[in-house]
Length: 146
Length: 152
Image 1 (spheres, each protein chain N blue to C red):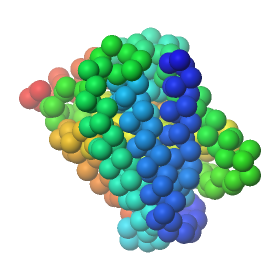
Image 2 (spheres, rainbow over the protein chains, first blue to last red; image 1 turned 180 degrees about the vertical axis):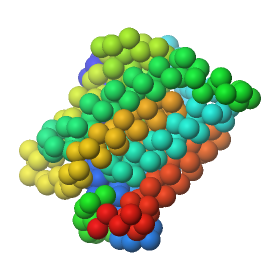
Image 3 (cartoon, rainbow over the protein chains, first blue to last red; image 1 turned 90 degrees about the vertical axis):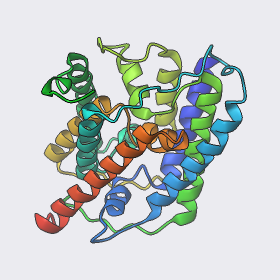
């Protein structure tokens, strides 16, 4: 049951990415190109997705627990710290270079474009590095107030 | 980067696709009680292959979710639709981009879906700061690459 619904929710997410145009790096890069060939479409993706989740979350949180798990596991960390800011900045730079964030990179894989076949393994290596840096607390050591 | 493919403004398709993405996030919260952040889902799945500190342990649905993402373009093509996609061809740049996106999302605990869609829907201040930061970094990067360094 968990496997089936996991697959279906991934499928709906992926269909959303492809239909919205978010899965096309050219569209993402044009969205980020305010001074050039600006394509504002992605603002509509973010708006539609966030509004739907905003309303839907409030409906499902009326339940005591999720249907297929014990508890709602919602992030409790509220600190705006160095790993958050550094990570978000690095992510934004990479997003601006490649036009891919993690979701679209997965939906792009079956089309086997050379750029995707390079990007995706590099993404996984990067995630491993990022988790290492975080676990070792390399960014906390610089005297940042946690 | 090197390519500047013109894309058409598609407000309705984008809005509709966005609603599907939001719907998926709601299903994941309602069924599994989790944030549908693709970076986190990928990390959870990756944690089943290599040791990864802090990676989520509930791997079953995460693997299935990734398979669902992979199936999406296949389903659309099987239904007679077209999947429009232009991926940058500079492979060195794509390797750097992948490393930065991977490192950044692991370090910053989220990506466009985790901080963007799910975080903003939760009205998380931390996510709002993350979104503002990666959007700004993305705008600046594309501006530099296209209009300062002149990547044609």
